[in-house]
Image 1 (spheres, rainbow, N blue to C red):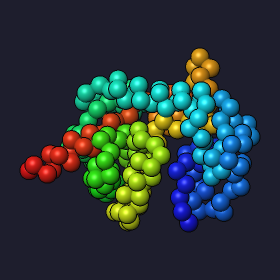
Image 2 (image 1 turned 90 degrees about the vertical axis):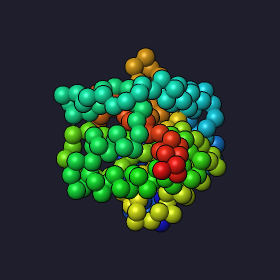
Image 3 (image 1 turned 120 degrees about the horizontal axis):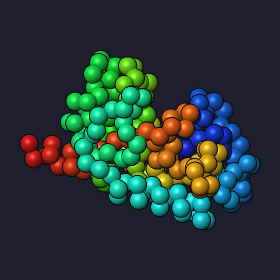
Length: 225
């Protein structure tokens, strides 16, 4: 069964993962509003939000601005077991040294490394790594990766990762600027979370940090060894 980019209409990222193993739902037709959607988000006919309208444009702009504000290096983890709030720029070497501390984690980081190289080959320069992989959780279940590209560029990047097959079996790739139509609202009544903002919050809504991997820089260093 072909994986969708993100299941926006049925609860966002978690439902997207479940839907890969289930019967594909019936989406609203192209241009039709999502039931209970926010910000006037409308469907592209296959479960994604059309990147049109003020809410979707704002979601993309916030993602890009957050990446531009990234700080260098990985800070110490907080007592919660997560990175401090924000976007923290890093390399594969630093990320692996900090978080590949057991056999299961080492296997997931092998998948992340293969994914990073595939993304670089597809022209992607940087990628966000979020979720429990960048936390103190002993045995994370997967690798959540987001990139700030859309349209044909995202589809090409996703295909490059899919071509890895079992070498990236636990990797989930998402477009960081996409609007989640049923994610909780942000403070100040911003219409809705984008994927990056989803990555930056725990299940109970607490802020946490993410790692911004220098995909292009890592690839260049490998070539010049």
